[in-house]
Image (cartoon, rainbow, N blue to C red; front, side):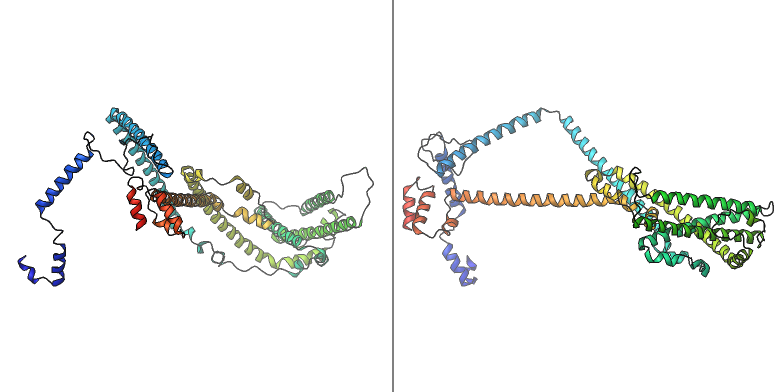
Length: 506
């Protein structure tokens, strides 16, 4: 206190005002001992004086009299709830005691073994999951390192960079008789289908001609084939082909399977027959041109540009065109087709190289696709996500029933890999898992908000039971209703009647 003169004046004023409340340590300890002895004597159940215990400080050892007639309304309901709470606490304590007795009676070594088994199972699961993830990562790295994974590797411009352009098509081939007649009434879809069929037929004919050319070159030195027998065989094959086409078209052109009723030929049927006849004529002409070109090709390869005179007499007299009867037409066709033989040979070699390269690429891609499919199958067998969220049956059936709209689209779909279809179950499973997780989170959020609302309601009920009407009095506008609510909800009025009077006076 010697240095108090150096302190500022506000601090001295505060010390002067608080000096009456500050007591020495011995006096404080003496006051605490007196208060403790007073509380002990008042709370001693064996003593004469007994301090009544408030209902807000309940315990499982408390005894609540069920025969009290004083409380009514909310207080009576509160006493009943306190009694139920005490009974529930006692039952919970008894159940916990029985459980502890059973737990103490168990073998500690057995409990330790159960814990170690659970830890071992968790460790095994974690190792399996790590192994699966490691395998997936290794295969992904392996696929990314392969050169076929790049996009420019399969660019058709780079693959066909050194391939020469195709020769121009002769005008005799382009000016097909009957094309202008069919172009007026034919549908666009029919023209596309015919073009696809002609392209496929040309490919097949090209392969057949290459095989035939190889066979002729191999047999050139050993034996010479009889041209008359070849022409006769070609005529027979042509007649058989025409007969088969006519049979099929006649079957397709039948209007009705009923034969008992008289058939009336209508104008659409006459138009259909004319359309079929025109197509038959066009097919005969195309096959005749094909026969001429093939004969000229055979003559050019064997060195015989002039057809023997005796071959025309062996031909069937029912041929639509007198190709083999006029040597002038044969020589003209031979002179027309001969300049293109060298170009056809070079183009055939280039196409053969292109086909070989395409087959090599197809085989490589097929192997990689097979390996990727095997990896995906193994991962699907080991995955728990696909089993939990399988693909619906309707979606798989719908994807299986899809049919291509044209022949070219169907061929392209056959050449496409089915890796996207194999990955679809993974995409569906991940999306379903994300949706389920989101739904679970939203459900938990709703439950939490409902629990918070319930807790707030419980707090409001407790405040109302404890007599805290500060929140309720703000919403009441009538003064008389406010007095009635304060007198009816105050639980301390019945304990001491003067408290209520003091409240009303204030």
